[in-house]
Length: 299
Ligand SMILES: Cc1cc2nc3c(=O)[nH]c(=O)nc-3n(C[C@H](O)[C@H](O)[C@H](O)COP(=O)(O)OP(=O)(O)OC[C@H]3O[C@@H](n4cnc5c(N)ncnc54)[C@H](O)[C@@H]3O)c2cc1C
Image 1 (cartoon, helix red, strand yellow):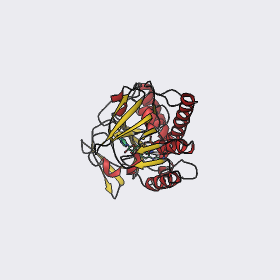
Image 2: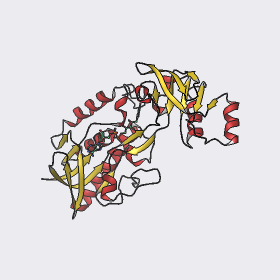
Image 3: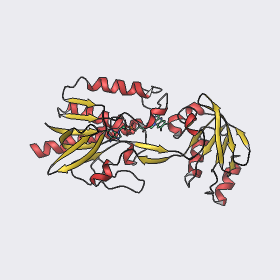
Image 4: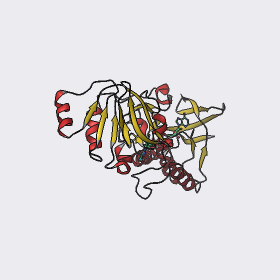
């Protein structure tokens, strides 16, 4: 069977794309490996009508919406390969099956690369987060640690200061501050520690202290860490999609990549703040673009 569209990735971007395509009467198949970026968290925030929802519940509700449409099918499976054959695409799943479609949406998301600090994974998504817009409210006014090993550290600290004034900034042995930035941090009574971090300690996901390699310890109740955002899948690069300077899959404003017939949406483009609502919106836009492109080809 030739599908109108294969969607690879079933986070908010892929799921919303499926909804729009399904409602436009297109034959859609969505593959999802089921390892979304926010799997480590208990609550998602900032999506109107769904503020505070569990990520797994958000997904269940989305799948329930899609079940109304017999022209949409969902497979819980990883896509391992994809190639263009003339005007259509062939994708291959982990169990060796092949599927064919006129268009492909990549919505495979990102992964968070963590600094190499003992214990950090116990707290990530529980009391240490990466996005203050997502989780700053829950940590407001608490004594927080801000960890970043790269040049984003000053801007990142400034943003987090919006939610809590009690900050200790840790560079984990790196030095990315200018003199002027150091003065501004001091003016706002933000302490900077540039020693290497040995470990994070606490209980049941609740951060209690940061231990440094020189033996120093500080008490903190939570924090933010600037992660390295990496593509969760190499399918985009494999098919020849252009990668932008942020490491995202480059698209035009309506989701088209440089490869004709391949569209991309959600976190993976790194062209919008990486959040649920922007991912879902990008999914909707890419799907509408595909409907328009198919109509133009067929009319
Ligand atoms: C700790 C943390 C907390 C967060 N909290 C919030 C919050 O409170 N509010 C908010 O708005 N945002 C939050 N986010 C961000 C949010 O998770 C992302 O913006 C959102 O999930 C992006 O949606 P997406 O559809 O682009 O990708 P994802 O949700 O990551 O979904 C991509 C899907 O594609 C699948 N996939 C990847 N490769 C393949 C393949 N080859 N074949 C098949 N499937 C594949 C993945 O397994 C995954 O299921 C948080 C992120 C983190 C890390």
